[in-house]
Length: 369
Length: 217
Image (tube, rainbow over all chains, first blue to last red; front, side, top):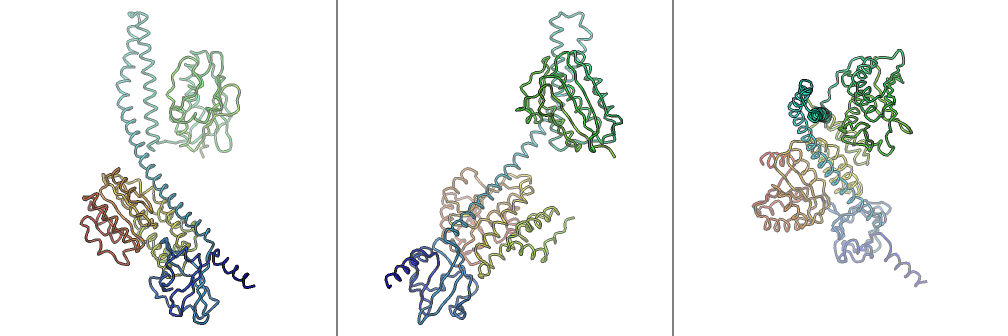
């Protein structure tokens, strides 16, 4: 029987995750278990029990803890690692010895908790670093937009002059020029027109990203805007042998919008539809009222947009793999600008998914009340 | 005009109670409300974060709360500090930088982080290296960033010998580098031991830091 008692005592001595102190009546530690030695250091024997408790304000008096055997005392103890730990203590007096037993969550739990704190701190530091880098990037982006804005603005005047002079020469001197020279001048005019479009788009993007897109909204008859847009873009369609058709729900409520900006969106969608359509096909525009919004769609019979490329369509400078049918150029900014404009109106712009032929772009604008 | 007295005793009492009970969302609501009211970030740091953590520390020292509760309150506060970052990091920068760190074996990092943030708030680049930073890592960062000053935070008094040893090595390796030192540990003494270092200055509070160091440049 004595052997079994020894086994049990030794087992608890080696394995129990409790603090166990046995000290004399003056508080000097005479005996501890293995866990205590591991946590507090092997030199614990002989120390005053009061020296292990962390309390900056009250002197530790052992007799204060002996009056009630059943009471649990929450006490923080200093450990060999330097980091204090919390235990719930009971104190017992037996003859000329005092026993102090401190319970806590398991050692493993304490370690987990400590590791969690370290990880949390690291996460917080990384979050701080991320915010710092983001702020730096935001400032760099603002600088880039300012640069773009200034550069585009300053380039627009001389390039506009080149476009006008090339147009003037074509109009006034065409009969005197060789065919090759006419071709050169036509190229100069066409390229400068593209450059002007690019500069205008860059100015728009830099203004939008700087939060300077100002909308002057009013009740607008969207049918008028669509017809106005078709008047100009229809000329290009006609040149390529593409027909443009439209149909509107009648009556169609007015939308709350900036007519100039909405026309910019329509011009862009119609130009794109014509750009990617073949001769003999049709571009259709429809408008109808749907749950508080007017939805406008622009549909073509071109090659459509591959599913994999749909996601990047409305991003700045994103180009798809689809080629225009007559070599027309694209700045890669038109749809990004259109999205910003429609978003700013509280509407939505999207491309219909799941089509096998052609592309159908739609946008919605809130109805004016 | 922002009411600078938004953090009165009543609001503070609620915040502290939420913090001690681990009610992160409630603490979040209070801080968000103060930020939305455009209260001075420094006031939020000092009158809410610092004050509450001092009180939490005191409760722990008096064995009123466990270490786990203290750690939870610290973690919550660290998370809440990031709510102010959009404001803190959007200030216009000046050509000044500071590296703030806690030394090896120093695990209480929140005070140091507050110091680094106050630098940022004043247009400095405030690099914060975090808790338990080895001396060699600090030196690498100093060589890399060439800061105008280095700040060392000390929270636990028994680490003071370690601090003095680091100061000795830093002063010898970087004789002209300005070093500031501060933290809760100095409540228990030790300020006088810093006087032997000509380039080391003790900073009592975040207000002192701003008035005496940052604005003085």
